[in-house]
Length: 400
Ligand SMILES: Cc1ncc(COP(=O)(O)O)c(C=O)c1O
Image (spheres, rainbow, N blue to C red):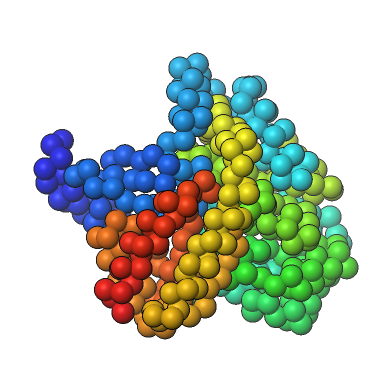
């Protein structure tokens, strides 16, 4: 297709042929490199959203591209009825950096959490009477499949699809006494995101996380950490549990894991690692050679190019710069860790800021009427950060 009018033609196809589940911005991206994107007219954008935390090593990282090219020429798919090398090399590397023992591969974050929930239910069935309840946290986002939707405690996602999977109890964020009360002998697991991402970058307190660990141990339930968004270096360590010092029994990852290719992982250690047995779970595409090769290259890039450190330093820099806007702009609360940043505006104009920011050449996202979210590549440079912030500031000034 000619690039002239291409976006309009694609919009028409979207309307005619695609189920309308997404509210897309009217931009057509055709190329990416590091933290920059280009549209079909050659305009460049600083990407401070990183494909919603997927492009942690930047767009088209050369290592990932090379690994994908080489693997694509060798073998694309054979299924899990056979051995392929990248899957097992990835299993060893990923469980090591995550501090876990075993992994089940899948294709997305929701699937990783679905696996975690199945481990939890089967774990609870060992008791007599069986413990089947799962405790989740208000405002959480764990995915849109039926199991994960059932623990995604937000009415806007759940209501249209009820009845959901039964046996879920929901506690308010950071309410330690409600958590202690909700976790009983009937509980098989507590599931949580250590920093809630989709609800607007809301950290769970260390006290709440510790209480979850303690209560799970007291009643023999599993603690599940959904690190689909916080994981793979996003907050400055491979996984956030490694900073907060509360170790989950089951840990999920996806998003950044594949460097842009779809792959998810449900990991576990201790007895939880041996709950699933032959035939209990499976997936046709999971851990396929192409996605696994991309994931291995992604981990190597994060490790060898100092991206965990950069995520800490540059994340702090971004937060400080945004904090300095408070003097002149209606910026209120600033939250997050490393390259996971959310901040509120005093006015409900975050979606308008996102729209104008695109005109100014910077990609960000709104998680609500007042909250802007940044999930930049972990290897963002100071120059890219400054340019991105300058463009974002202009957008905010224009809107508020
Ligand atoms: C914390 C968390 N868990 C699960 C998911 C679902 O991942 P996916 O969209 O890959 O199914 C997301 C997606 O945003 C997420 O942020």
